[in-house]
Image 1: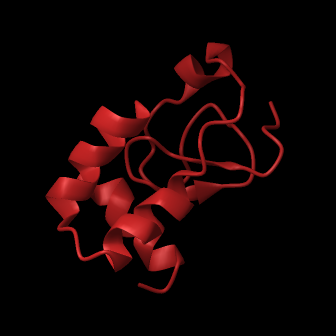
Image 2: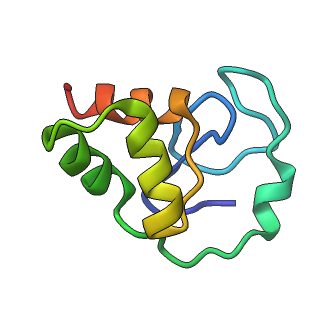
Length: 87
């Protein structure tokens, strides 16, 4: 169940190199993801960093990702992604 460059756990936001049955960090079941569409989503990290650098609050970024890009991202995942970008 390899997803190329990897993925993030939708529950805790931890980066995973491949899709597994359970997240190694939070232990949540990830089996529902194996049937998900495997097309590339928009570059979520790039968009989040851009909005952060523009001075938007975390809540506004989460809202913008959902309304403008159709990407539902939790506040926890957003903070994790920004942390990975050293922000």
